[in-house]
Image (cartoon, rainbow, N blue to C red; front, side):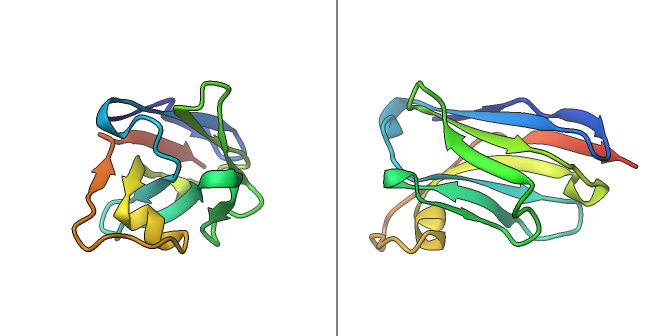
Length: 125
């Protein structure tokens, strides 16, 4: 359903681009986002995009990360620049109830969440 790619290791100040391909029964879903989880910390919102390409960002990444749709509309990109060691985490692509609520959208009580398998991003100082 959601397949991430593009993680890796980079030095502080460097850049990475993550991709999320949406497929299967949720192909065409318009609200997609990225979350991350570092060891010992809660999962946190990184960025989201919804219909009309309205976007939101977590405070810690504003001005450094950009979420967008690729020309193939079933792909969502996360461009990460000026990376810091504190950006080190597993990054997850998300669709469904949690990201929709984060973006102020109405959800059904039984609406599901969809998560990718995660991709590791490691930033060294």
